[in-house]
Image (tube, rainbow, N blue to C red; front, side, top):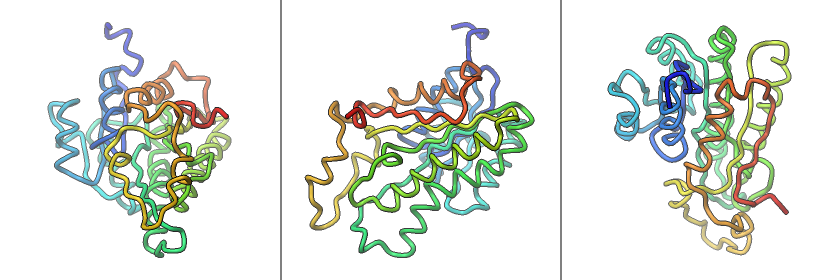
Length: 253
């Protein structure tokens, strides 16, 4: 592939959750398609290790912060713009999902579910808006099939992921007349550390849990990242407000 064939050539992309799983794969693929990627995640060591695979200087192309803090979201955008000179693409990949009985969810657990999975994409998007509007950029949010269906023991996660689809649509409509595009991808279960490390709450009904399983099983992150990369590119210039299910047949019937 020549430089003229790279669909994200010289675009600056901020990718959250870049230390592992889907975020790490998105950072790798966007880089391979020509983008300069700034990665954000909580674990500094894991983040630098992941970013070392896509840049020779991971320290200046990443920031380790807890995106549950709105101030950290603003800091992440500022750091990206300062390091790479602007912002064309924001990919909100970071998320957290812990299975819990709804009746046992604490106030702090509920607030963190919403903070990481919904509020962080909002505050990141809000901080990124001036930069994205200046450069006709776009936002790709990562929701989940849990954003369109219910899942047992996932009240906070489902609520937040449903909300992220609503946020995507609201922003897409608000910026119809502007140059900003906003889309959302809703993956099913993937082979990531988060999913493979799930623990079930005591007394969980496994029949209910299995209702969330896809008929073709878990996906590789490499099967999901290309859709995100496409939506982030100018090849998707006519697409905004889209909600894309990518779930190995989970929601087909």
